Structure formats: C-alpha cells, structure tokens
Length: 299
Ligand code: CP
Ligand code: NVA
Image 1 (tube, rainbow, N blue to C red):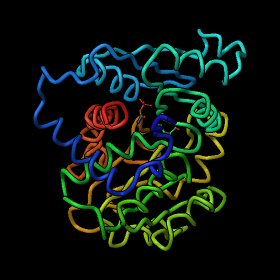
Image 2: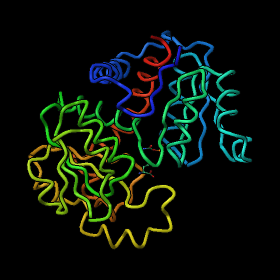
Image 3: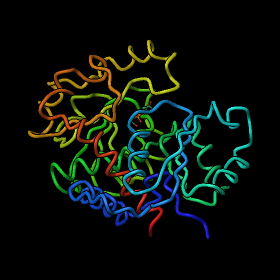
Image 4: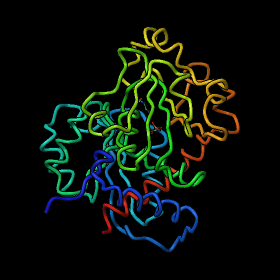
C-alpha cells in the first residue's frame, strides 16, 4: 500500500486539515510527557536549504513523541554527489519511518514520494510550504476561531507561501486577496484550483480592505538572493506598515513565516506590534508538526 504523504495541503481533505489543526491545539494545551506514540521511530530530515524553525520543530516533535530525527544535509550525503533520487529514496526509506525534505525543486520531493516506502513530508520547496500553513492556521483558530468566511490578505511575492495560502483558502473556505506587483503573481493553475475565493490586486491598500489577517513574506526567497536589488525596487510599494493595518478590519492579525526583514516587507512597528502573532505561529510549528507526524504515522 502507498504510504500517506504530505507534499501539499491538498493532500488533505478539509476535514483532515481541521482535525490536524484541532489536534495541534490539543497537544499544545495538554502536553503529556508519557504520550510517546512514535517510540523508537526515526524521521530523516534532508535539507538543501537553511532552516531554523522547520528543523527544530520536527526534531523536538520527534523527541517529545519518543522517537528521534536525523539531520541530513544534502551536501554531506551522497545526494550532493549526484546519487539518483530514486535510489536515495529507496535506501533511506528502507531504514527510517518518515522522511522530511526541504529542497529547491518541488520535483525532488515528488520523486522521493514516488520511490519511498514511508511517508514523505514537504518541509518547503520553491513551489509550496504546507507545514507553515498548519501553524499559521492553528494560530488564527486560537486567536479568532474559525477562519471560514473571513478575508485574508497576502502581501508580496506569489511564492511558495502564497501558493500554500491559496490551497488553504480552498480547504478552509476563506477569501484570499493577493497584493503583488505585476510579474510576481502566483502560478495561475494553483489560483484556478481554488475557485472564486482568490482576488489578485496590484494595490496594497485595496487588497487590505475588510481583511481579518494580513500576511507577508520576504521579497527574495532562498535561492533568489541575486535578485534582491531588483526585487527591492519591484516590491517597494508592498511594505506592510501601520497604515496597512489601519485599512484592515479592527483587530486584524499580522503573520509572517519568518525569518523577516524589518524595514523591507514589514515595518518593525507592525511585526513587533500588538496585532502581530508571528511568534505564536513560530511556536506553533512544533505543535502542528507533532499533529502532522501523528496523522501520518499513527493512523
Ligand atoms: N518559517 C520557516 O520555515 O522557518 P525556517 O526557514 O527557519 O525553517
Ligand atoms: N518564501 C521563503 C519562506 C522561508 C520560510 C523562502 O522560500 O525562502
């Protein structure tokens, strides 16, 4: 039987996503050190890109659950020397219980999934970042309740985070306004799959009206460092500031997956201000990852 994978939020039904979010809230509020459902199990974590939150949340989550995690930099394994993905997936999955990958190409993760005998988790690719959405949505539910029927505004690049927000809008039934410069829109097929919930704007102010949650991300993602200067020019009218938060609904939340650049995509006043829940969302990576691991490995 094919293992259950988590490569995109769309690998989950709406009901499964709700249950992972609720379970993450429960695991956070009722931590039981004796609950060790993954005793003796091993998670391999393959990183082509840097990480703080993803690595720590998965590693700590496995430890809390009685298992362990292996940090594998692609540079230090044979993957970095060109061993075929197909062979690597077969070999690694024959020794561990789950594999999490953070890669440049999305296809690396889908190829691994095809040849792996154990669940594969997408820890971020150039296309998607579904794990962050579990934590962001948990955070919204904790602060404000159900997100169905609400309006979320994505500000900036139509990148991996934006694509996963589009998928979340579909599964959790919220409206997503995307404020991005011309030339930095999300992939149209991903937008189309979410039906009529997605609105694209080229004005930050218009996109922020009636919004319950303002979200942004870096202007240049990992792997785009050489485009930084060009992007600073393209995105300069897409900085989230107090005036953005004032246009949004009263009590709107602010999120950013982190790491953030204060003074670029967001002002320090907003990210360090009272509407910001960025550090709650960062902590929730741990609880959400535990709920995900339990969903994939225990059911
Ligand atoms: N938000 C996020 O994925 O953080 P890391 O890059 O630190 O894992
Ligand atoms: N869009 C960012 C997210 C980092 C967590 C990147 O891919 O670098």
